[in-house]
Image (cartoon, rainbow, N blue to C red):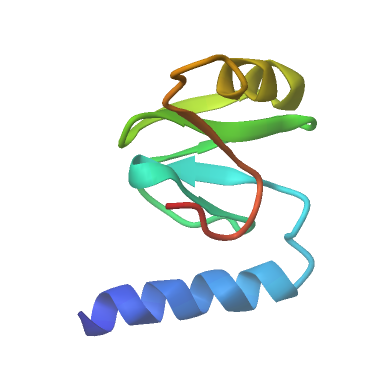
Length: 85
């Protein structure tokens, strides 16, 4: 558990050190604005992380994600903040 806490701390420090422009996604739809290692995809400008159910699905344009999210019975979620669960 200490390693996870340390990794999160490094992420937070990196986020405040001027890396806030990059949005990185990883499983369980955790989005962090820092270049953290392992299992992550870097979104391009104007993209957000999106998920279907509890599966991380990747990066998608913000408008397309919002369109999918707004459909009836949609289980799509969009994330562009530091945490999204």
